[in-house]
Picture 1 (cartoon, helix red, strand yellow):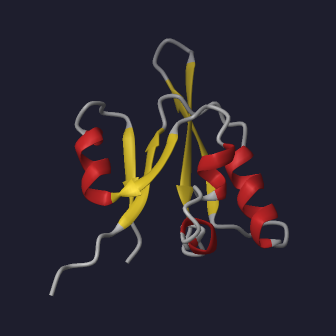
Picture 2: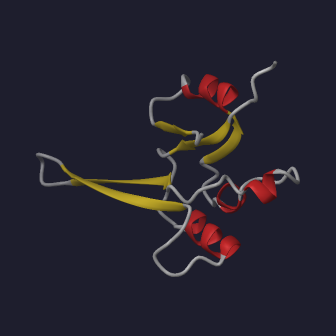
Length: 113
């Protein structure tokens, strides 16, 4: 019996601008109440020794994320991917996404079971 392909999200957080569009799109897609959703944008502030700070945004799926199963069954992208203004999120088969991940160090691959 052939193994079923796993799907996931590849997030290139080097280009995330922290616009929160992915978070809003998910909340609107599923009518989540305020504070809940399938993806949350994490803001990380790193204080550098030269009195400067470095700000990173990482959109990261929560335990509520189902990769927009109703959308992807129709051949559509998950809402977060479709609406990502920076184009830093990609949906696909995990094995294909993992191959892309080796090209850049600042990526996160998320694949629910």
